[in-house]
Image (cartoon, rainbow, N blue to C red):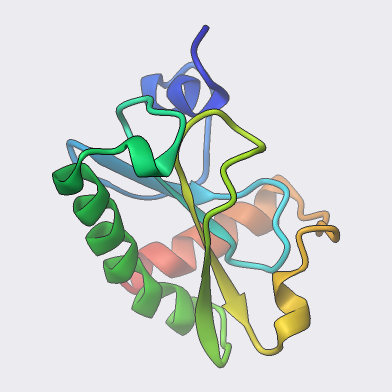
Length: 129
């Protein structure tokens, strides 16, 4: 069965898209731990990030790195934190999270943002690319 991320890639489920290439997609987490919390995925459904071949893994990280400056411009912060957990969705993904303190990386707290707030944030990030 396709993961929720594969359904986003195929367009079955909408997302607040940040950027896309032939191989990768970045979109806002709808249950963010901070405004601007972005998920970066390979379009190919592979469960575990360390099962990606070297080229796909390095491409994913390069794509994520290109997004960080735009997120920083859109959501003022000290830096962009990177996290790979890999338990919540069986599809390799990287979390890019604007940080001002270590507490901002708390996955136990989730923000409630309206679709309008998410789209405004996504638009601000896209404008910085």
